[in-house]
Length: 227
Image (tube, rainbow, N blue to C red; front, side, top):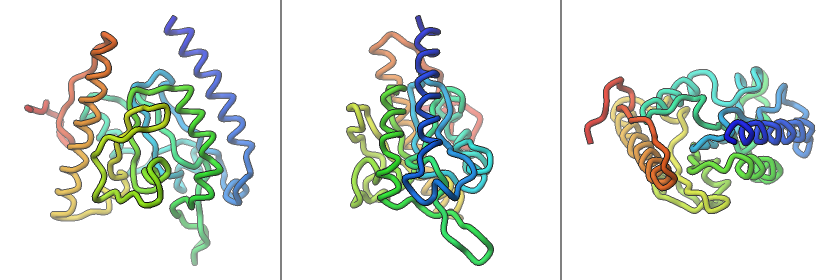
């Protein structure tokens, strides 16, 4: 039964990805190399949503690669999850860009672009039906919680996401990488608090269904966390 459901969801995601790839509702649809639809386990308990593809993601057609992707995998590993255990997507499927002195540069997606792409994201969430949603960064948070959402003040609070799925917001891995010194230490601590909350909610919901979950280890460490 599980194999049949996995196959059904994979087919549904493939069809949806083809529709997203054909979309040209925004100008960035004509500028991008690849439509970065998303990837991961269609039966995932956790779905992560970032803001949009960068240059490397656009080139490879995969979300969260490069340094930010490496840190994301380390973050997931800290709560006992591999990249292959979750599903990763973005609020927009095409790379948002602006013209710089040396060519196109990354930028955050604007509200109109997120609105045009929202049906594709909603369809992904509908197909996957994760237990928990984790929004990474302010643009992703605002796509769910409104333009006035203030990530530095409001992150770490449980919100009601699409389909009433529990939604938590934390800082984007790229933001973490830009911090230095004491600011880096403080941001790491906040992200770790958020990840522990995600792990606890997944465990709680898994217990209700009789499932088991992996043990978490410390963020940026390789040893078990002592609570």
